Amino acid sequence: MVETAVFEAGGYRYVRGPFQYSGGVAAEPGFAIERVRFQKPKPIADGFAVIEAHLTALDRPLTSFCACELRSPAPFTEDGFIAFNRIYVGTLERWGIFRDEENPVARSNVCPEADPPPEPSFEAFSYTIPAAADAQTSFIIAGSAEAAEGAGSYRERIIRLGDTSPDAMREKARYVLNAMETRMGALGVGWPQASVIQAYSVHDIHPVMSKEIITRGAASGGLTWYYARPPVEGLEYEMDVRGVPVERVLTK
Image 1: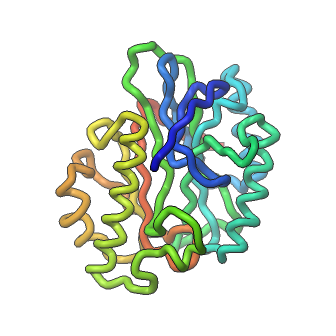
Image 2: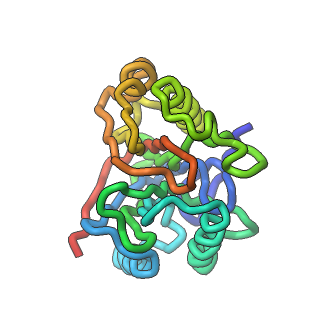
């Protein structure tokens, strides 16, 4: 069952998830989410420093940090993914966000097949700002691939592990799309409120587009496809969704 909680210090609510990320975030009344993309991905340590400076310049607390998108050189092993995530949440703990294994920050982390970064890096980050109480709810749904939620290793939970046939890719995508809808529903939003829908795979997604995505109204505003892999070995298809009114690009 999907559970949500409010992170009052950040001005947003979130879908509870594992220690490394939440399932998604939505701005609370009186707040909106803004997104900033780096023109060139920033290594994790440098990226956190830029994010801190950016929030400080806006007079926003570090706890307003609510989501990020990462790029990694290649898919992790399961142990490597856990080790990386422990380093990542260390900064969130220092910022007063991560506490008692609870992480409200939504996240996507994928691995570009072409021109990958030499080390894990920030592609983008998001945060809350004050807004009109009646503003449309802004939200970000964290990246999800075709591994069922629950106990066990990724390899035990991956849907049709090792199978990338068109039929298998449709089944994988169907699971991911259902996860997106479940998370959006828990936050009180849906496809009509989405401003950007992103898919990540190195496989042909045209059968997925026509049979799974378009038919449920998940691409009325288009779909952004990245030639990239999900972050853990064995995963083949990932998506994330957002409805954000303001997006910026940092050129330095």
